[in-house]
Length: 430
Image (cartoon, rainbow, N blue to C red):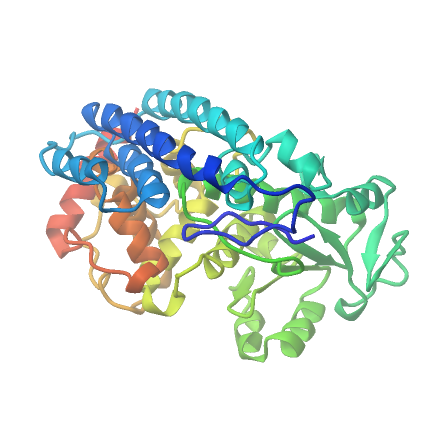
């Protein structure tokens, strides 16, 4: 059975069902769904939550296309809205969550009743925990690891690990190097490790937490993968083993991981590499590195995206944004305030009262001071996603992820941009 992954441009199909699909039922349902999402979009737009409203209007366009009267009316009204001065507040986010989840779960339940492949894909996109669809697909949920085939779930419950094509009891005496690493599959990743099984499970759970946060913060934009195509995350015991692993799997990254200033690496061949001690050299846990590099792995698989067409600051700004959310363990989180508060720890050198003029942020490469550039990339990404009610959110996502060739972000201009970010940061201070 093939595995479905939600993506922005349509998704892979699941295996044929026993009964015949009802394409007419799904075709007739899509206009009603599009109308419901547009109704919510207009409600949000009226309240100044432009980023949220753009998301809902985008879902409507994916259902019915961009040339409908409803889609055109939304764009016309959006063009007349005056952006709010403030960013999104906690109440804004929680209010949106309540409204969208009510709508999504209703639609997912409707789609689950249809024996239609596309409808089933939408059901899981809107509600990943839609029980009827998951049962029909023969999947079970493992806490922390997501939805997995029933056989895989059963083996994990028995305390087994995957070694090659077999499920075996973990044996630390055998897992002494990366070549003897065992596997822990999750819904969206495959963790390859030489660490104790309990530690590898913690890492796997952290990666799935990252994926859910990505789904929330970059709603509507996710990877599309088939069975057996999840990226690998190598979690090893020593720096020497890490270097040997990278040399064999991604030789271009050898010099990078030899640098003691590198806590981890995500490679474009869809592997990420960590050693347990690496991040500790920086005074933080491997979880921060997992969130940063893991976000790159998700990014690589977004349909239509091209990392090479997006500037470094945009790619890294998105990753650092995820990194600052590494402390989030509960699904009940607020996307506006915590990232900035967490940044005080991640980038202690960044003083909000002295936001730099962001020189070079429109360039495709970092300038000399990488640490400053990472910090500025975070500030810029955060402002573009949340400032002025999310006015620039859609532009940023296209630009940062390189979708459709990227595009331009008009406000990214020197001192004027720094002033905008300065005002936004002050509005977040409590």
